[in-house]
Image (tube, rainbow, N blue to C red; front, side, top):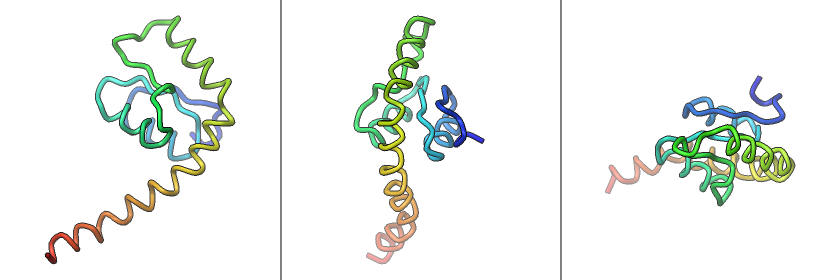
Length: 102
């Protein structure tokens, strides 16, 4: 379902990870360092997020407008970054094994 949306706005970690993982441009409302770190990892920037301390209607609409105007770019970045991040996640077990073998 998330993958069928034009864009998604969310504040909870699992919903934004699910949305990003399904290739949907996502505006994350963040209140911890996990969200900014994830956006930096995927996009190389943090412009598709809004800190909850700055959450108000004008700021939300400004960020949403930016995301929708850059939808194609965001989708392209997601389609290239997500497979690489999945590879990293799946390789964690081998890294742990190597560390324990040393």
